Image 1 (spheres, rainbow, N blue to C red):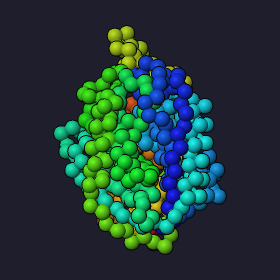
Image 2 (cartoon, one colour):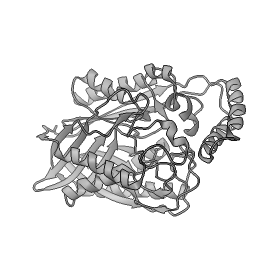
Image 3 (cartoon, rainbow, N blue to C red):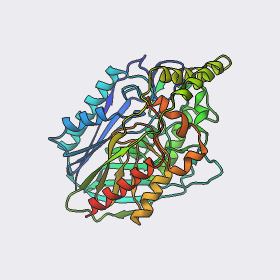
Image 4 (cartoon, rainbow, N blue to C red):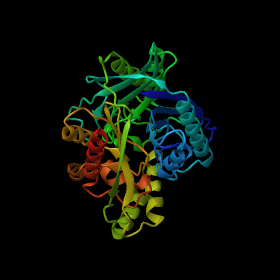
Length: 414
């Protein structure tokens, strides 16, 4: 396969609004890790990974249009770090227009460089369980052991790129952190690139909607969440995942003559908003603010602002797509924040391992499987407000995305 990779950084000035936590006290105070923009181009397919919490389809469409002469298909993903700049047009925070332009320009430049440096590569795949990092944050009594993936692209005696995939929320850093950072993916990439000097490592966050290192989503309503959530801990977690990925046994991939791509549209309806319920909630939230700690008070204000901005009574469905890429190993890119159960369902339907990446091309919110709605919680009931969406997605939407993924994978393989 013809493969190239490149890295750019996007300058994020001090004072830029940060994304990921409505309870954060203010904008960035500095930079711990530069906002990384990484591109992998395989034949005519570009995969871009941005160190941001979410991407908007306006961003991914713009990048794809600008690189069309270098790559026929372009997928833009967010690592989902909760310590990046706000660049999703009001979703998961405000919108820092200057930072967004810098990120877009860096993405376009990275794809063009990667495409221009493509060389013939062999591909190996490694997949390992037993990483010991991921936890089901909604059901801590349910053990999970999702795999870490490593695709390695080699040209003669050097590694051109590694693609690492693991489903775990990059929320080791909590809302008290006000330094721009990549969270654990930054340390993971550094470790892999040290092992393969001169290479580029892309990290793709998997189906991590209900997965993190072991605390409920609601722990992030306060500035300092439960457990050890520091820069040092983010480094430790990233190194641990990288060590598992690098130690996993490799096998040679029988690659097709050219990377095959299929894109399948999806249309996801929202649950019907209830105006009377919103009014009651606003009264309740204002009462709660009187005694809430500062972080929770800011979260509640975000919800109040959402309710008072006006929500359509009958919102149009969200429309997007799922993209499958076959390079001898099936890769599928899902929008939004899919749960781990969706990735597992895709693998069962295909009957073989599938590298599943979330947060791709558009991130409009969580996609809980239908059986999770009875359990409520942030992902089901509350997150749509921070995402500036009119309501949660209706039950069955995750299954629609999963079915589209299976359709896309099978089409790409044939």
